[in-house]
Length: 128
Image 1 (tube, rainbow, N blue to C red):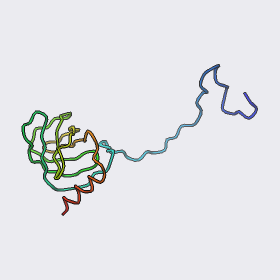
Image 2: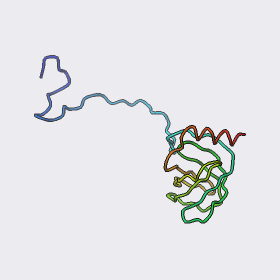
Image 3: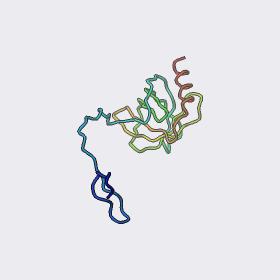
Image 4: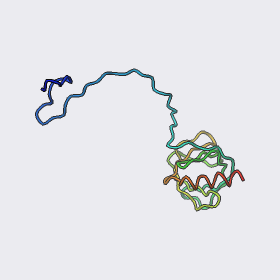
């Protein structure tokens, strides 16, 4: 151990030095149980949703949208983990997976996130 070393004993031969530090009991910010990768934008428009095995899309009401997912109001019997394809206005169907359901509401995560410019275009069209 060098004369300036105050962090405890030297590491074992070929080993990792021991950890040192102190515990902190600093409060963490409240974390939403449904923490999301990106913030969602409230929207109000219809789109088509086709569950895996379905022959055609059913009209659903989009309540919010982000690059990573969306929330819908639908009469479909959706189950967590179910694969679905969402047809947003002006786009090809986008693959998503149902993340949660609560009655007629469902939250879905896109398998491949939307590009932010595509999200901006969809939101602009929904408002216009």
